[in-house]
Length: 324
Ligand code: CP3
Image (cartoon, rainbow, N blue to C red; front, side, top):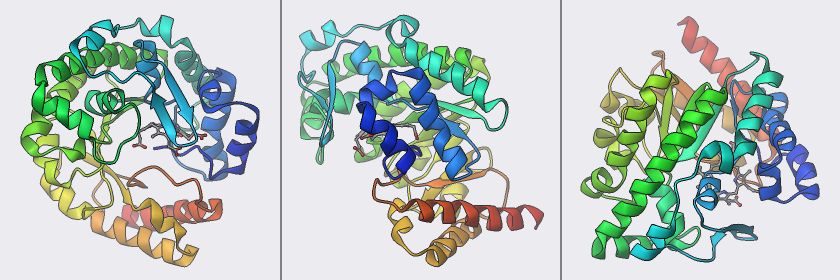
C-alpha cells in the first residue's frame, strides 16, 4: 500500500510539476509513478496510483490536499448533507482511473499483476464527517452514537458507489482489489460489525462474481480478526501490532495474509532490516498464502536503499521458505 510516493526521487520529480490531485487525474503520469516501485524496488505487484478519497469528490464533496493532508471544507454531519451526496456513474465521474488501469495493463504486459483499490465505507465516512484526517475521530463517534441512522444512510450511499467503482476497475483490467478500512480499528467488535463489516460484506458479495481476489486491510485489526474472518475476502492485510503467526492461526487456513513489517523498521540500517524481515517470514510459518508487505504505508522520509534492502531480504528468506 502506498508503495509509490515521496520517499522516491523519481516520484518527487513528477510532483514538482503537478499537484497530487492533478497527478491522480493524469493517466499517463499516474501510470508512470505506479511503475516506479517495480523498476526501483523490484516488487512483485503494481498498485494503481490514485487515492481512496477521489470517489467522495465524485459523490459531491469537494476535496483538497494541503500541507497537512486531505481536507473536506464542508464536512457531512447531518441528514440533509447525506441526502445531497450522489451515487455517481464511475465511468463518467472517474474516467482517469480506468484509463490509468488500461495503460498500466498494457505497459506491464504480464510482468506483474495490477491491484486496484477503494476505501471501505467506514473509513471513507470518517474523512467526510471529520473533514480530514483525525486523531480521535470525535465527530464521527458523536454521529455514530447520537444519530446512527444518519451515519448508516451515509455508509449505504458510499457502499453503492464503491460497488460500482470496484466492478468498473475489474472490468478495466485490475487483477486484484484491495479495500482499505484503515480506521475501522478504532471500533470495538460490536460497532465494527454494525458500522463497517456489514458494508464490507455487501461489497464483497457483489464482487464475488467478478472472479478477482479481494484483499481487506485495517489498521489495528488485532481485536477484530474473528469478525474480519466473515468479511468474504481472500486476503487480510495485517498491521505490525500483532504476531503474524498468531493472526494466521486465528484467521484459519482459508485466508491468505499480507504484512506486516512496521514501516518505521525501515529506519534501521539494512542489516537490521534484513533481520526484521527474516523474523516475520519465520513467524508467518512457511505455508503458502503469505504476501510480504509493510503493516501500513511507507513513510516519506524512508531512505530508498532501505526499501530495496527489505525487498532483497524478502527474496532471500522467502525463497528459502519455499524450498523448505
Ligand atoms: O501504493 C500506491 O502507490 C497507491 C496509491 C495510494 C495512495 N493513497 C497515494 C497517495 C493508495 C493505495 C492510497 C490509499 C489511501 N489514501 C489510504 C488508505 C491506505 C492508508 O494509508 O491507510 C488513505 C487513508 C488515503 C488518504 C490519504 N491520501 C492521506 C491521509 C494522505 C496524506 C498522507 C501524506 O503522507 O501526506 C494522502 C496522500 C497520498 N496518497 C500520497 C500518495 C502517494 C502523498 C501525496 C503527495 O504529497 O505526493
